[in-house]
Image (cartoon, rainbow, N blue to C red):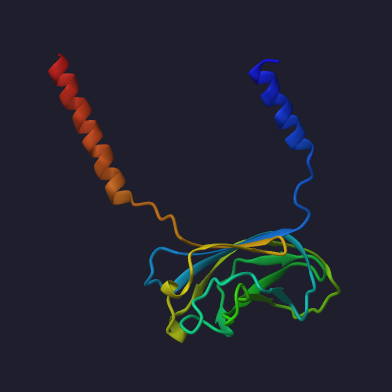
Length: 187
């Protein structure tokens, strides 16, 4: 059996595997440690109990420095994260960051407008919003960079990948100059 055929069979098997039935990915990012404005992105779908318009992710990991970072504090979110399911589409309005003292037990709540309580059901989450920590005198350095997983949900705390246009332009300019010099040298 040739290599191409083996790879084709592998892709066929992977395509037949069921996709994850329920998973949310929440990403919290900022360009630097001193940043007070964070970007929060939520994607995926999950079976949750929608208690009064709140999506609750418990024991998701030690993503906040206990004693230094936000602990059971509410922060306003800009418009951009939505939840679809029972009661229609709702927009996230606030987020609660909760640092607990035990191992892997920090919690995260996302509060949505409408306040509709619902039985457990499947909800689809999407979008990005900003969260401003400055009102509570916190910054991104109080978060622990990493990937945390609990109950199929993933929380990623990372630095933003902000394109550095200045150094890219300088490198491109140096490349063009080197090509022009080489062209003159070669005739």
